[in-house]
Image (cartoon, rainbow, N blue to C red; front, side):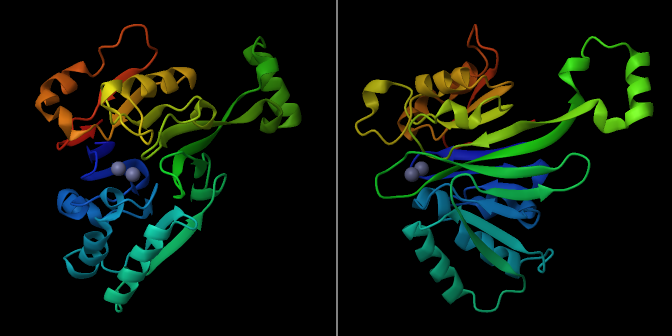
Length: 282
Ligand SMILES: [Zn+2]
Ligand SMILES: [Zn+2]
């Protein structure tokens, strides 16, 4: 399991990204659904302060303090700086959990910030980007980025012997260049994300509240069609995961699940997360 997702518009949304033990948003039910995995989470990244994305923090903070498991493991919650609803939640949790057995840290972020996840040969970090959801509320999206090495493009035609010779004479740095690969992108609730912010990502999670444009009364969320257009414009490499689908489509859950992957002419797979189901992606 790489991703564990629960997403039903207005009720609850969260995405657990297991390779880096990150929880994106924390809707109601997150601790009971994740169970043991709730102890594995190292970081939570919140997209915005609506209840369906943060109500699960109450249970999550509490369970890590009380249930069986590692009670001393630090938990860091990142959130859009200046978000009023999240500040209220932060105050509530501070007042009702005066004695936590672990360090709970809150870190505000602004668009363009970076959070280091991993050092070493292939460092990884989270970068933030701005999203548009509702007026007067700051919201953020997140990319997980990996720093990689590859052969310098000007050496593309070089023979193995030439490359070996350059490495021997000038060192490994002379033949390799660094590039950055976005592995995963999470937009939270939003109207279409600006494709440049998620350009080239392998997996994009995009708001797809409305399957039918005519059902949208206010411009706060995206449609499935818009999510596909963003993924196409951003040249998503592997998968578009369509989240936050309205429960008005719940009778179409089987059709929604069956629709996954059946879009011809796209360079990536389209995965629709049925509202109200625990959904895993390998
Ligand atoms: Zn929402
Ligand atoms: Zn929202």
